[in-house]
Image 1: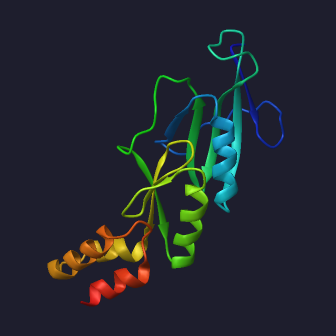
Image 2: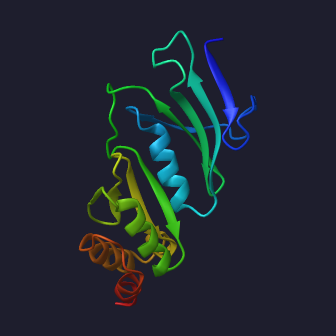
Length: 174
């Protein structure tokens, strides 16, 4: 057998089809399990589902982690230890939709730990994956038909690193 599959909780062999038609596949250089543990510790509904280990055929060492299926708030992902060939870029990012400033603050602090804060609500975590920590109110205001309001909101957001709901709402009022 080239690879073995097991559930993260039971360690017994388990095969299950993906319940989601399209799944984000995240490439790591030997740190897939560490990254998954990091992400699932941050999201209250985060969980590791299945771990697939390399078998005799490699390319990883026999028994080392090849794939990990995991969930963050119901969204399914797969992490792979694929090697050093590919790195994350900001061309792809994950958006965390936040209802409150407390949520924005929490995810900003946790996901940027050991990483890099950028601007306009963007950060890179310690594994190089880009995230946007975004208040829902900001996205709602961008969808307005009031062009002046939208411009005020955008100007305010462009001056921020971590997005501030109160400042965004004040900008919307004019």
